[in-house]
Length: 263
Image (cartoon, rainbow, N blue to C red; front, side):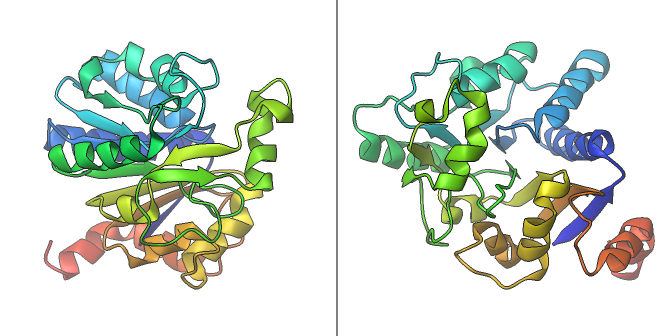
């Protein structure tokens, strides 16, 4: 697991966007796994700049979003489909048929989840999966206690997640209690994973998932089992890490490290 500590949210967003852009330039038809929420907004804003000013081409990529609130229609202003359209898709040259977001108002959630898994496989699997992290350590909507082998399914949300997301709704009573989400096992199938986190409120959980034991109570800790994970944090989110000096040394001497191992 590579840990990159940025000075602030702006630098964190630029580093993350550069990682995604590098993947697209290396493989023009990359399959991306995308996330929603406050944290990736800066990353998406930087991707828009790269598209507008440097011609970053999204025309051949496919994307699969992590999750969606169960019960919300795609055009609902609080749906994650609406979020992605507003903050990314309508500003770049992706093809709508290649933009996959779970359908929150599907009549048969179980069948839809199986279909979503099949579509990911038919696309060749996810090349780069972007993640955020919840305050209780969840990735996507894989709440504490989720199986580390889980696949796309309907998941009940815990009280903390409902409270955290209430700010996006008129009242906490309007927050859906269930979501369709990729499973931890689905996420771990990605060839590369990028997790971004910022702010003091994420410091404790970042220390736990990076430096603590692997446990289903903090589903992000399962990323320790993956061979190619990059975590980009701002200084506040990294403030409780015990091995910051080591992570910074690796960052500052990356060329030397790669030279020593023959890359």
